[in-house]
Amino acid sequence: MRATVIHAPHDIRVEEVPDPRVQEPTDVVVRVLRACICGSDLWAYRGESARQPGQRIGHEFLGVVEEAGSQVAGFAPGDLVVAPFVWSDGTCEYCAEGLHTSCPRGGFWGTVGSDGGQGEAVRVPFADGTLVKLPPAAVSDDRLLTGLLALSDVLGTGHHAAVGAGVRRGSTVAVVGDGAVGLCGVLAARRLGAERIIALGRHRARTDIAKTFGATDIVAARGEAAVEAVRELTGGQGAHAVIEAVGTEQSMRTAVGIARDGGAIGYVGVPHGSGTGLDLSVLFDRNIALRGGVAPVRAYIPELLPDVLDGTVDPSPVFDVTVGLDGVPEGYRAMDERTALKVLVKP
Image 1 (cartoon, rainbow, N blue to C red):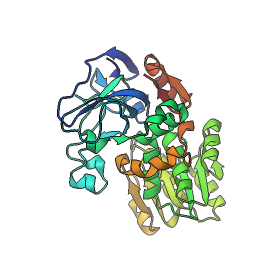
Image 2 (cartoon, helix red, strand yellow; image 1 turned 120 degrees about the vertical axis):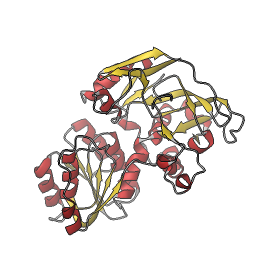
Image 3 (cartoon, rainbow, N blue to C red; image 1 turned 90 degrees about the vertical axis):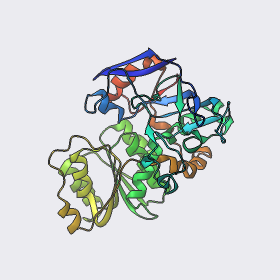
Image 4 (tube, helix red, strand yellow; image 1 turned 45 degrees about the horizontal axis):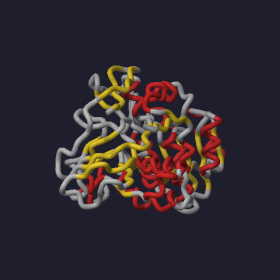
């Protein structure tokens, strides 16, 4: 089959690789119908996170089961399924607690020895604990299928940030980051009943999506100017809940600066580029809670899926560029240069 591999920073290729096959009785093989490029993939693309030459890449996909191992109980060939960005056995204590990302037998797509999502097919370990079945009719609805793909990562990650930030009905929420995860954080905050949602971003196309998703205010400033702007909008107090969806030291400082005393920050931006760190005494003195981390999206898919299926939540606008498999290298360039928000891949 053909799949996307990374050889070096800025060197993404689509190459012939061995076809996936059932290796364990709990495996299935999924033929990929939709995949995409994640903002976190760019850290490998830019050389900021290490990869072995020829390693697979991509962790978001949905598709059709082509082959199932003898011990797979919940899926059969022909089933339409979505995969969270981490596989998990579904039986350990962490999985039972909804923390599938800590499953001792789990793993991330694209790690050495595993298939990546940006290819024609994927071997899925522990299929019963990992995959979620989708209605077969979704195959014929392109917009719905695209929205369902967001369940593999960005929608669940934005929801995780909103939950971590304690978003509740009637609250004021601020979102740091205008990428796909930040925009899904806006969508999640609206879904959870936030009364006011302040989106921080300076790219018109992205802030327009934020408004569509439920943002009531847009702040285009950065750094101290952004803190001042949010505080002015909130009568000097700041936001009850802050979603941090970037992962830099500056973005976290902004999140702390715009949080209300007694509020909370839900952070899901993959940490990178931190130099001096944060002064915990600031959070201590102002009673600001900090919660977040790698989103256990497998735990959230059953909750979010009905709203995507009935159109209550439609994350599909975050995909603004579509490519075939051959176009994936150009898709990385477009996202790296910020001429694309999130690239959809149709193998």
